[in-house]
Amino acid sequence: MPPPTPLSPPELSYLYTSLALSPPIRPDLRTSFQFRPIVAECSFLPHCNGSSRICMAEAGECIVGVKAEVEKDATSKYATVIERDKWIEVSVEVAGGGASGPGSGVGVGGISGAGGAAGKDEGDGGAAVWLKEGLLAGGAGILDRLVISKGWHWKLYIDVLLLTPTSHPPPLLLSAATNMALDSTFLPKLISPHDVDDIPAFSDDWGISVPLYEPSTFPRPPMSLPVIAVGDNVFLDPSVAEIAAAEVGLVVTLTLADAEGHCDIVGVRGMEVGRGGGKEGERKGISRKLLRQMVGACVREAGDVIKGLGESTRQQMFRA
Amino acid sequence: MEGLRNDGRRWNELRRIHCQLSTSGSSADGSAYVEQGFTKVLCTVTGPAEPGNRQRVRGDGATVSCEVYFAAFSGTDRIKRGRNDKKVQELQTSVQKTFASVILTHLLSRSEITISLHILSQDGGTLAACVNATTLALIDAGIPLADYVCACTAGQPAVAVGNGGDGGEEPDPYLDVNYLEESDIPSLTVATVGGGEKVVVVSMESRVRIERLEAMLAVAVSGCARVREIMDKEVRRYGKEKLEGTGE
Image 1 (cartoon, rainbow over the protein chains, first blue to last red):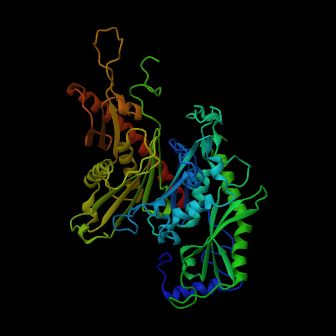
Image 2 (image 1 turned 90 degrees about the horizontal axis):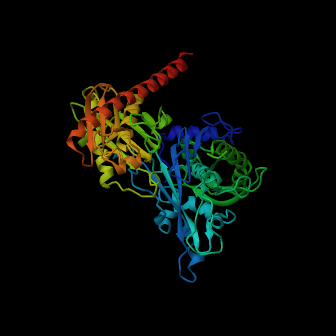
């Protein structure tokens, strides 16, 4: 289900028409590839290895805390390789707006629902799943960084707290916040030798702690951008109303591949959108050319967005 | 180090209090963020609004409801607290009861005010920080209150060892205890209405000698007055900034 909008069919039709014009007119007069401003902070929670808070005008507010715990590798002979994807645990919790609000305080999309039908859905149960999926997808290399020494690894808990009550967690908000939190995550420095399988020892000095993602190394933590198409026009960072009027929507997960801002695609997922210009229940297909345009737009524009977020993270990090 | 506490404060010193109004932008009617030392709480208030549930409609006043969320990452170890956790429920009830009595609910009949509290980081004095954050968020939402509700904690340290062995003087109560002190010595939380001596909340979970209670209360109440000053200063600063912003 797409997020509910308060728009009536005539309003939707008007919005659809203005978005399908050439050049298109967006309700807030943004250009097609323009993003809305955000408020972003990081490293403000003393009990977390990494933390961030992101505020967006429409999507609301989101706080992410990353905590790392030392864990022994599973002892079974073959388990070490298989269990690696359990080293990261993502959970998304949406606060209810009053007991009556949608998704009232229930933890939606704990990673437990990964295998179920909820995992396919972009909404509720899916949020934690696709966040983790992006992290684990090839090239991100995060699991290698979690190895401490022989037989030991970090277990990473990524807790996403969405403060605005909604049953449709906005992908850009969640992934931007997770991206920033991971980018500002520091792990204590190992002082015991690497190749001994004793309990590892760490330095107490946070001044020499190691970042999870070493600055200016690539790839960086992933980020998911929503993109929609109306007619032949492609729009980045769509608002709720625009999603309701869109014909097709995608969430493209990308990671920065080099310092110039080129991006690699880590994943592409469909996003539920409204009924566009058609009737309720009718859905038009999408041409290959348009699909290419949508993904291409994300790849082109994402570099600046991720780089900008990364710069602001570095300015605020406790160890600048 | 004579006479100093484990974080370098004197007995009557507060931790750094940082408060901020309207942190959540347009997504809530009122919001506030309070840091007391490393205790960090974010509060959002929705309302007065039409109650979502018929049972919450009261003809003679507004219904106040409260939700508390402990972030899984708020403590030293990662703990997930469910909705039915005892600590969550207790905190919810104390905040709800306090503000149901302080909000001028008779002015807002047939409506509902929802307070949601997010505890992002815990370092002692969680209830106090929650009460302070709620007061600021309610002010931000423009909900009529009798006065500021300010909360503070106080703890009673044990008699210092090696004090000449006379066992004579009791040490002064500690104001605004942190997590280490909170788990070590008996402490209480007090909330007052206005900077005066009108106490609305007293909560204490440990045993202490009855003679010491008076002193602890006195220290906590004086702390509340100081908290009020800090909060009032921030509200005025924010109000002024807002007015100047709209004047042009």
